[in-house]
Length: 107
Length: 121
Image (cartoon, rainbow over all chains, first blue to last red; front, side, top):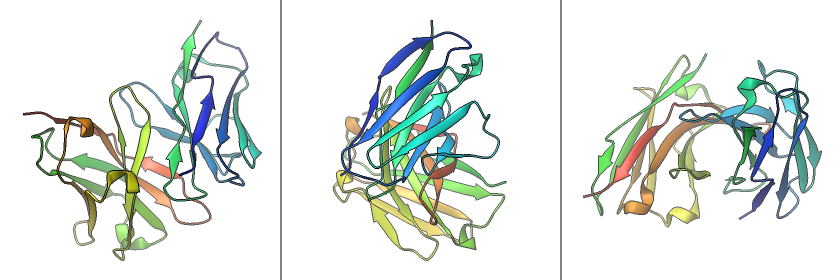
């Protein structure tokens, strides 16, 4: 299985901060990498697909980059509604696997 | 827009079979181009993909479930289902159904709201 490792596991940030979350794959996955946001008690929501494509309806302050094994999710200016847990997911090989999550908390 | 909704018992006894159904609305499960998936999340933990079914009946299961999972589809009811046999307390989780694109890549969107299944006697 392809292992997905996110860093950091958690971070504290303030409204307006630029936040970057990293996802590393245990082998190359080209750009078969997707990002989700999950708020407490809710289902995950797709933010970014294919490493850098913004899902319809998602604010443009979210962006994704990377290819191969290293990927980043960036929130350019953190908003109150962005405090949540973020997951990456690879679809290069089955079984499709997720990172362990990065919790973004209020500083 | 397509919406998914999980249903099923919230409590299952150890060694029994967990059964959940996902009802799809706003679109046909037979329209093709998608894999209909189950994903679970242990309390306070990350996400684990269980497997998928295509409306044609083809399936894939995560080997981590050790062949305990069966996913089926009922196109007449626009539903797909999950059975997980021989459950233990370690199977306690929130179960989500989700649609995965087939091409050009496989991301999950949308998701159901999730249903908590507790395995306990």
